[in-house]
Image (cartoon, rainbow, N blue to C red; front, top):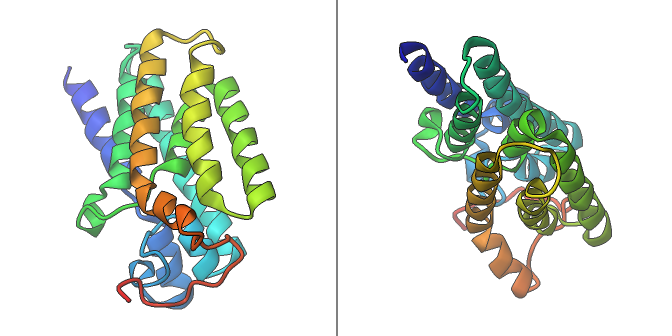
Length: 204
């Protein structure tokens, strides 16, 4: 019991590591939250700092999600603790204690978590994400579609417990909720493409 509590707390702390913030600080010396969309996730880092910084942020965010699940699998015999730890890691990313609970939208961290828990549905969701980004030149519609495709495919593919699909659905709903500002910009045709520069103060 105590070990499970430790794993859950550790997962939150791992998930909360602000990769985009740290990478931007290291490379450019400024706070990514004051630029572009103000989000410390991979998309804003990509547009604001550069391609490799954005890719590095995505990979680090995905890695911390997968790491939380794999640590839980190694130290706990419960089939539910890895799922709980993965969910907590995603929440840690979205509401990170390290940045006064102002985190990212959870797409990359979710990919890492469910890549470790539901590899085939995650691969399908990632493929749908990649196709939409390639077609539209924008990350947000791909992220929103992936948030729908992952829970939908998890119900039919992968052979995992139904609880995994339920958590997928909850996470997908949260990810879409976090993208409401993007949806509004898409409707107004003002959403930035991922190759667009975004070096302006987020508060303006």
